[in-house]
Image 1: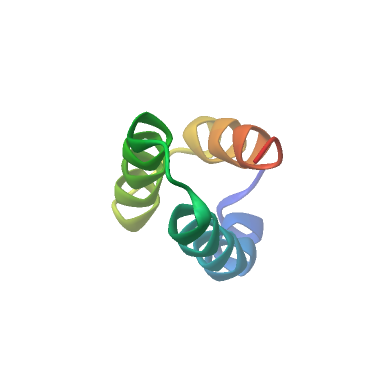
Image 2: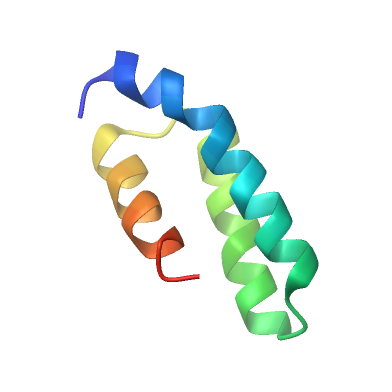
Length: 59
């Protein structure tokens, strides 16, 4: 994945994560989603981004 494609998909992914976090009641899953959000708001590598994207699809 290139940085350009990450840039275009970042906002929708973050929106999905915020929505998923709001629907969760399990504190461990909320913490995991929060860590993903923190990583994405920082400077994620393409590998980190792809990993979060694949794991977020399982939500």
